[in-house]
Amino acid sequence: PRPPSRLRRHSRRRPRRMLDPGHGRPRAGALAMGALAAVLGLACLPAAAAVKPFSTVDPRALNVTVISREKREGPAADRFSAREGELDATGSYARPTNAWWTMMVLGRGFTEMENANGFQIPFVMWAAKRGVSAAMPFVLAQANQIENGFDSTVSFVTLGASDVTVGHRVVYHDPLSVTFKWGGREQGKWAKMPIVRGSPYLTMEYHDATPEFDSPQVLDPQKGITVDGVPGVCPGEFEGRKFELVLVQSDETWTIWSSHSLRVGCQTEGALLRAKHPITGVVRAAVTNNCTMGRSAFQCAKKPPADPEPPHFAKLLEKHVDTYPVGAEVDMSAVGDASVVRIDWLTKTMPVPHSGAHTNQTASERKPVLMTAMEHHREMGVCSKEGTAVEHTGVFARNVNGNLSLVAADQWLMPYSLLPVSWHSVHGIAQHARATIRDAVLEDAQWQLPVNYLIGAGDPYNAGKMLARLGQVALVAQELGEHTTAKQLAKRVAQNVEIWAHSRALNRFVYDESWGGWISCGCLYDDCVPKGCNPNVLPPDQCHCEPSQAYCKNSGPPGDCPTFTDPGMDFGNAYYNDHHFHWGYHIFAGAVAAHFDAGWGR
Image (cartoon, rainbow, N blue to C red):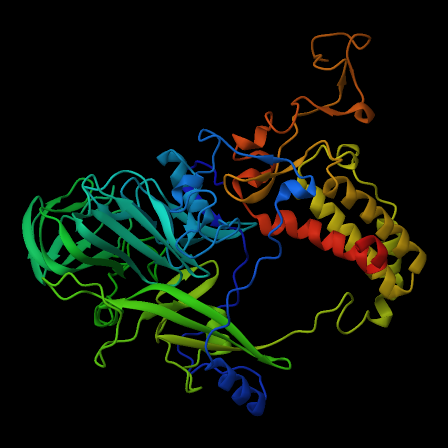
């Protein structure tokens, strides 16, 4: 969950080293040519079958407390097309608990939804009432940190439909995409947006629904609107298939393409294009210039006031606009330590006017789908299925993850050299550092978990971090030959893992059958006795605090779990925030304990 501030920050990762976009073709990676050829051959085989679930056992059979959350207790499981116990559009009973887009479907109110965003790359996106809002992030650098920033108050746009019902549902998802759908007030009326990671466009499919593109921003008084290449003046009405809007606050030019001719109304204060009639077709929108008038402090090459910059990618975006992605198949093939990740972009074409048909692309004259590639894609080299490197453009967009380029290809093949996996360091501990590291290990081995975590009254996120760190110290001790210390640490790790895994923690774990995930109940921690007394009001002989007598003021599951209604408690654990961290730490700690004691692990 994100803080409700005007300037929203999306990531706290440090940026990768930037590459000069003027360099030539990217290298295909440091793989031996024979291995690369073999792996590329494997990559041409059909994608592997979906991974089977680890378990289909009913959690109740494992003595796990199972709860069903009421509608007022988010997250909004009813945003999925399937009801509990029914297959969804992907043929699964399970709802993702850690997908890149999960936050976009958890909130209920629309102020809350703006905080529940996803980094689609290049856009930060969040669900609006009848569409999806998007903002192009920028690098926000301060003295001690650098991060993605974006403005969800003014400098964003929304593509949607004016005559569908409020509220989106998930009708499809795969590793790189999610599709939202809005139903209509009338039978057969709907709008659907496939959100595919890496697409430089917003894309909406309409079935007897009325397109709408709006923003809180103001249209530029000089440039305003251009319709099919002809300048216009807002407010007014226009008809065409291509609309260009220059927005003041972001300094962006947004180009909107429609598969069908649209008659639209236009306004300036809060830029708005609203069609006068429904269509069965497709509308796409893209940023074709992010320094249109030289006003952007974040996107222009020079600090404002700067000279306007030309729309370097406008022609390329228009050239490929007819082919749009609706999903992706991702697979990996390996020969020894050489591997190739394959991405097959699932695509459609913009329908022919008046036909209304959404067809899979089969025509030989079709253009390949245009997507953005990240820095590491350039470094590895994105190859075609023939094994030749694909062309990258210059820098299309910039964010904290690095510079993005544009790539036109329906299939990506990316070679990786697999790294060895070991409990210990790959190259061993340097001889000159062993004494220093041994001293640090022996010192860290004396550290004790805080009392509230020893009884499982804290949050599982920090509990997992502390256990994982102890486990890592045990492994370093083992590599140093300090076997007694290593075994003692591993035993402590195992004892504390059991507190959480065997439901002995005061902050209990439960299975949420409304969504299909493993979450914490939450603990309203207190250590003042008698229970409920206030040491700020009563004298010490009537109320004192003692950590060894800590307790939770809430009674716990099934009915008294504060995390169910507080998205910020336990770092959003019950709202499926960062579960790869929360549970990853616990899983690693348990794995370390089992490494030292296989019998305990079994």
